[in-house]
Image 1 (spheres, rainbow, N blue to C red):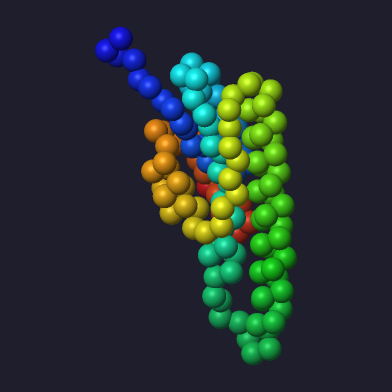
Image 2 (image 1 turned 60 degrees about the horizontal axis):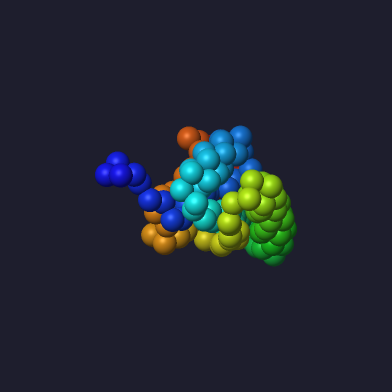
Length: 135
């Protein structure tokens, strides 16, 4: 058919939000309809977490320690998002791959998206979940 679109691979941004869950639901429907593979990506926002801040003398050590704790927490949350993604894809019988990447979320998703036919994201994103409360 001339109007048939072939989707071989979809990239879904995962951030633990309801918006991300909706994006995954859509991606799963599309993947089933087109016999596609889904890649779920969760990005640990290291630049946002470890951003240089002006701190009083002697506090730099504590800032570095806090950054390490936030990075560990972000990796744990990211792994949880990917575990949920893997479980959901497995339950739906959709081939999938889970990626935990580190860097600037928009940059990473754009770069990773070049390897896929379509990027599916929630209408609001919370990729900087460790450092921001708003989308």
